[in-house]
Image (cartoon, rainbow, N blue to C red):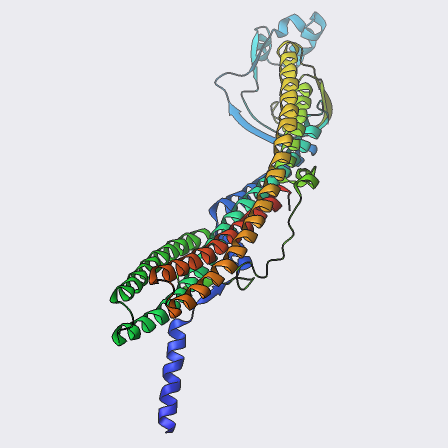
Length: 452
């Protein structure tokens, strides 16, 4: 007896392990999608790149330090001199030299001499140049880099919204298919009961065999629907695996509301109370950043045509005169673009036109964003109304099925009427499933349209 209990327990445990499935909730799938979705990962990398660019531009505030070194040798000296000593020796100096120098040396002083300088040497130096005034190019360049970083963060938010919306759509579609599987199980059970009752009645001679055949045909149709649902579920799981980076298809998703629609308590928005809701969206902030970037581009273009001032200091070394020589220096530079004003003035005007275009685009797209919020609010309202209608249809089809079942047992309606009532019941339940999942998706679109 004890061995039998152990064997039964082992079989049950093995059956449980084989049939165990991973169950994911919506938040788990969203997190997995964000961590594994390529588009979202690229958007994160873009944020990191924009941050590094902002840090790179910030270094322009600091001095520009450079070092140079050179060694050379020439075939002729870079400086050559012709010296005639005889022209510099007076008779008095000549008399003195004649007493001091031999005759050969005195004769050499009577001829011109060549002197070469800087035939070889080494030069080295280090210089630090600190910009003082660059026409606002450094300041505005840093501001533009900061705008670029903010734009990349807004684009990351848009990517997150797209990934979340796709995840919600896949999730609720899979929930819908799972609920339809449950509906098929219920309908299959009802038909099985009907089949048994009719089969007994046919054998007893109180029902026609045609009734049994109609039930069999309906059971075949249920089996065909189950095959389609299984295939659709398998394909949807593959899509969800690719989207979220899941490792296997042996999983299911939970329905947080239990029975569809019965526990739905979401707030239904009023479209007339959505004015200005788009102001918190990433799309609207991107339009504002576009205007800001165009204005900074205009300032940068203007700065290129303004004078620039810098101060510097350096330490230099050379041995050009055969002696090591080191010296330091400080200096200031002023650069004034003169001919650039001609083309630069047109560039500034072009940037002003770009600003006007960005402002007009902001106004126009803001109106479209406002319309989008109102439209999604209308869609949510319609989806909720459709769900309410579908729920009433379930109540009515359930009562219709009950009455036709009673009528058939009493012999006052045909099998065709009973099966038609059962089909209407199944369709009404499936319609509730579809309307509920549609409502959930529309709510996500509405919240994203408001920037939530």
